[in-house]
Image 1: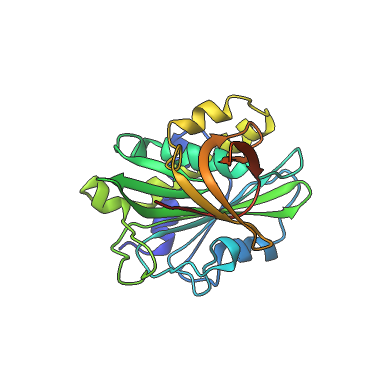
Image 2 (image 1 turned 90 degrees about the vertical axis):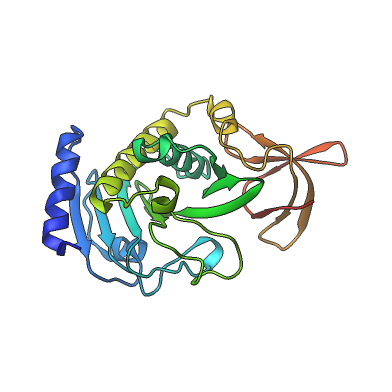
Length: 258
């Protein structure tokens, strides 16, 4: 593996080739959490910052869960300016933009588990390969963290089936190339969010792994909602049909049930 300065230079070169206004780029050999580092970093209004780490010692997932973060995977966070209040809809836009990035778009079976988990479906089995964690830095700034498996991770994760992008592509993945594509995807996701694009339900349906499935959602207050997933609303809420009535869910832990 090339040293950090060499990989950082490759990343900056790739971002320039994509005709992006290059963000401030940071690459660490190790950190506690890329999101946490950006929370602590002074970032000017309107400034974009991209931070990558080779490994995390306190990687964070949804609902405070641990994100296993050994070397060899992509751990990336971006801080971007935001012109309107943060809503859960941004997580869906981010997930959709990532699965449509050039390195991923050719893969069959990629999808999203509401609101922001990235999966590969094969033979009816769902295997997770990535996730997104979105946090506000300020009223006008959002931090979007992305973790994508690039190496074998099942020995680290015991409560679910996982896979990795290198196995799916049958080839090693260059982190600078993937990171630049993910950064561009997140910039585009924020643009879609700020445009309040009403086509979200139709766009999400192409990648919705829970559509028409029996599901159970554990709400933040621990109430259980059990029913049939019926896509998403324009504001990003999960639609669940329960006893012939519709329930809109904005936050909760979703799982498929038989």
